Amino acid sequence: MPALTDELKLGLDAPICLTWELTYACNLACVHCLSSSGRRDPRELSTKEAIGVIDEMRALQVFYVNIGGGEPMIRPDFFELVDYATTNGVGVKFSTNGSRIDRERARELAAMEYLDIQISVDGANAATNDHVRGEGSFATAISAMDELAAADFGPFKISVVVTRENAGQLDDFEALANQYGAELRLTRLRPAGRGADTWHELHPLQEQQVDLYHWLLARPHVLTGDSFFHLNALGDENLPGLNLCGAGRVVCLIDPVGDVYACPFVLHDEFKAGNVRDEGGFAKVWKESALFTELREPQSAGACASCGQFDACQGGCMAAKFFTGMPLDGPDPECVSGHGEHALANVGVEMRPISTNDHSKPVRVALSKTRV
Amino acid sequence: MSATATSTFDVTTSWRLHPRVSLRPEPFGALAYHYDNRRLNFLRSPDLVDLVKILGDHPDPRAAFDALSLDPSRWSSFEKALAALAASDFLQPV
Ligand code: SF4
Ligand code: SF4
Image (cartoon, rainbow over all chains, first blue to last red; front, top):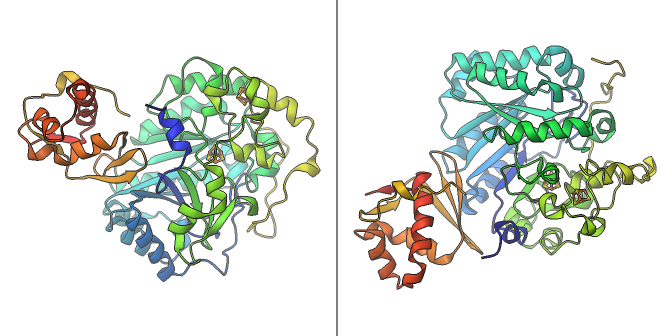
């Protein structure tokens, strides 16, 4: 029998991991926001169109969808859409900064079935978190957790993007999750969206990557969205997960205006496969678009071909390579064997792609140079 | 894929697909999703997919193997696959 990974590379009849960003509007302005969110886009899907997208998911047997944004709870029809999805066999996991979760909304959320909530924090204390997510955002997230706990929501998820600044706080994040009976989810920082500007300062250092790999190996219950498979090159043991870049194969993203991208971290024209408003809808984009067909063809290992670790790490993340201006068939910029760092040094700033999809508010919060 | 737990899988009783499990056809077989525990399983052969669908109509798994004329040399691998599904609650005793 061929390996599961090889079968998945050929693509599935429908995605397993479908992310749907409901709006580009956001009350925060995190410096690493993967979708450069801030302002609502006037072309965002109407309620009726969004219901149509859910109907398509049901028909395709997409069992659950990851809802995000922007801040998805800002949409006035947020509860209506979530309710429609969950009562039609499409479970929902949504990511929020917590700002809209007050007592009443926490109760409303607790009453819904097939609903998972993921609260984002990027530091285990206010200083570290607020440095990237903005003043007061840690307190807001904690208050949302308190409300969910008080409403008996059950185990929610605490979602952390691992950065150079918080990589030393993994145990603290675990303690925070335990305190709430929550599940911890750690994901990788990609140079996508506004993250393209801040990645070079924020991505974990090599020794932090090594620690993270061992920390995760010892904690298979910590969720990672399969995002750290490039770390598998560090040892004989693989982290749990599918161990492949799923872009356009098992993963994709629908953005607020209905554009379909290969993955949530490649919001760029080059990875846009179509729009749910096109004839044939999402299903046709998923099954027939030229981009997704191409991504399901055998990919060359390029410069990684001569590396003994290729089976373990698959050359890493396409998005990370793309936005740092590196060849897609070469090593990941965070290649644990050091090949990325080397290659990165040869890429001039002018070789990095220019954003084609920025909804940042006019005044951007810059990452200050002061250490935390 | 979930861990195998052959020891807890009784091949002498009747099993069926958990009513909260949905199957989605895929080129390699099917993707199974459990709406209660929200886990995914990959059923990586069309025969396995046919098998879990008819399992509940038979007094025990081997009767189902027979009904599908599965070669006896493959029975043990199917039993292992069923045991793994039972361990993650995708199958339940009837
Ligand atoms: S050279 Fe490529 S395959 Fe080898 S460890 Fe680095 S990214 Fe992975
Ligand atoms: S491009 Fe990166 S983030 Fe996107 S699916 Fe591939 S590995 Fe994951």
